[in-house]
Amino acid sequence: MRRETANVLLLLLGGCLLKLVWTGDYLRYVKPQHRWWLIGAGLIVVMLAGVAIWRDMRGASVGTDGGHSHGTGRSAWLLLVPALAGLIVAPPALGADSVARSLDAGTRQVDPAEIEAYPPLPAGEVTPMPISQFHARATWDKGRTLVGRQVRLTGFVVRQGERTYVARVVIGCCAADGYPVPVRLVGDAPMLRTLRDDEWIQVVGRYRPPRDATRARAPEIAVDLLRRVPEPEDPYEY
Amino acid sequence: MLLAALLLSPTLSEWFKSAPQLRTGVTVFVAICVQALPFLVVGVLLSGAIAAFVPARVLERLMPRNRAASVGVAGVAGVALPTCECAAVPVARQLMSRGVAPAAALTFLLAAPAVNPVVLAATAVAFPGEPLMVLARFVASLGTAVVTGLLWVRFGKVEWIVERARRRASDVASGERWRVFTETARADLIEAGGFLVLGAAVAATMNVLIPPQWFSSLGDELVVGVVVMAVLAVVLALCSEADAFVVASLPGLPLLPKLVFLVVGPAVDVKLLSLQAGTFGRPFALRFAPLTFVVAIACAVAAWAVFLGGGR
Image 1 (cartoon, rainbow over the protein chains, first blue to last red):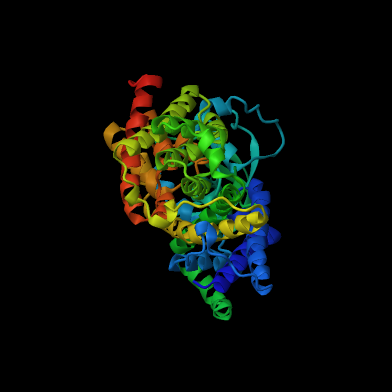
Image 2 (image 1 turned 90 degrees about the vertical axis):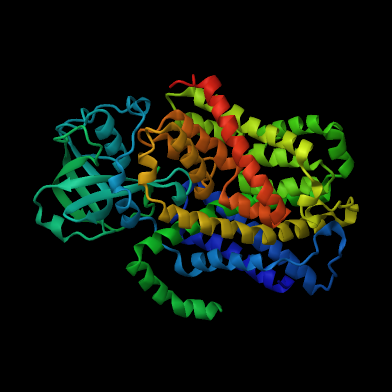
């Protein structure tokens, strides 16, 4: 690859990182804490290309010492793929597809040590709660802290046959390590049947203990209220 | 080309809607690239700094003459430097071209991403009920790095490493330093970046194609569990700061397969394999990766037997 082409590639790549932070789209791929890493990396990549271009324009010849003047192979072209994907398409956050494929695989365990810290929910009011916390309280504690309490969950819709779920994806570092936490919606609200995959909704409801506790399944919530909401800026839970 | 891509973008959006699996795959692919690129940038800056500002004799003084001892020093150096696996590759290569013995540079390559404080802290948080898991991971990963390094001292051949990676670089005159710094970092970034993208694409494909049931049906067969988790660690190429959270919550899986996953992952995965093939050459990568894979599994099993009681 020619030196000039490589510089343009680097400009695109650095620009892509900066653009993802600028628009907030980076939250579709990584944790919010990566923000400063991405800004730093984007600036450095742009600067490395900028300095090379500036030097070439001044006509300073690039020496052959240092052992780094060998031509770069065709593999460098691959940098164009994520650069353009980020700049132009910015693929959406993980959604219904990634949840649907794991619904049959059984639910995740939660370490009891994590849950002991959860205080009882306040009585008589609707408690907003991350879906992962609802999951944790429901799957490990036999739902004791949830019984009789109204909670509010926000997530996207996953439909599988007759069943409808509200779900979120929990990530540890980036979307590649994400795992879904689905909660099945039960009840006879007419809106339940009109929901479609990947729509964002807010659900107010009550935990419904499973009839058959031996099977690892997504916990269920009896729906009291249901409304569509815009996709939140940060689509994941952590 | 830009224009063509812009014109295509509505078509691409349509595609995404009609093929949700492709959409998931592309998201994972971009996520791996976005997550790994800053670490690669740190790596190439370190590599550039070593090339420009560290005279070869300083490194010579730091590293013991004896190659086996230098492997030990390199392993400990890895503990102190919290770098991601992508950052370690250009640094290891730079160390080689500054005259550090290949075995020591390779030990550093394996130790840096696996045994640093950040990774160990993440492991402790992910396994609150099993404090010994952290110790087991530390010992097994450091063991993998040192054993592989010692095996390289005994059996490794310098010719396996591509010539340009081991060419000795001379010290830089003081007026040239900034130029060498930026040029080295730039060249390393372009070279390694392409291979990182390739590795990310493979890992994203596997992420979509592997049915999640694989994870959940492993509870009964310990040996099968170990082998499958080792293979998954290679093909999923998770970041070493996040992998502990992923395995910690897998239902019904014993500790040994989980530990194997945590030890193999940072030492050898498709993203690293691709980076290593690009940096050190294919003959090297084809020997080094299987070696590391086997050593990592062996070290994980040994650490499990010692620290986690073996029987549980």
